[in-house]
Image (cartoon, rainbow, N blue to C red; front, top):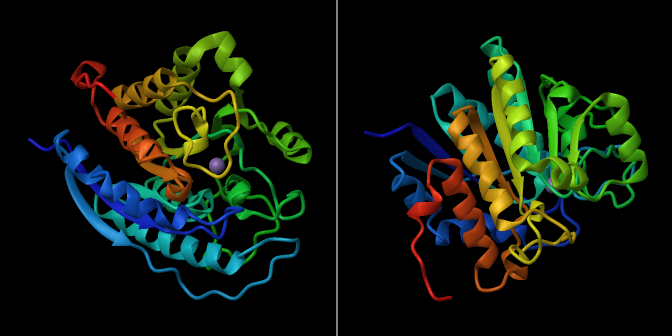
Length: 308
Ligand SMILES: [Mn+2]
């Protein structure tokens, strides 16, 4: 019997990143048969294809790049996401750079608010992506998505509807190891739940992820998980334009996803920043598909031995 229905929603945005290539992410994930892998775990899968970005013309104050592309995708992802939630699907958004979360998290937050619930966000990433246009050094909007959905200023016109801001204390950043100075001040000031690599080294993945899941359960909240390829150490996943050494290991990442699965709390998922142009023979793509499988019930003992 099927466990539930998952909608795969492609988001080939790459203007939010410093270099291009994420546009190929959704295609690579489909080539790696992400849908079939989830079907084998007894989910009903509908592939909704790639969203078409809306035409947007806006000018943000601050040196942002490709804001029209980013906003265009955010608007269509927001609408498609809200539609998927309302039809009872668990959406998996296939990115695309991390700016896509401006649309996906706000869609989850809208659905949560409509049901009178809170939304928690678990951000598995080397970076907290909490810059505003006025604090960003690069102007790359994939580093601003969390600031946007937590209600920071400077993003007027990204969506054409008001957002339901995520409470920064319900924004859990896990695995970070690269934070800009002003961004760090903002994170502290807003009370974001930041778990950096030092925390993970000292306390371990299990106790930290458990504390996040307990908070979600306590609030009877929805949980959006956003998985950035650079959460992983570049040894395991080189196919990303923003590698930072000292990332999560294969086992740490799988443990996190397995615990998320066990909790039964995840209501939506982003897979972001996969850049197939930088990958090594599909290694990072397969890693991302394997982690997704762990998030939906595949176990370590299910994995066949091979001589690679
Ligand atoms: Mn990111």
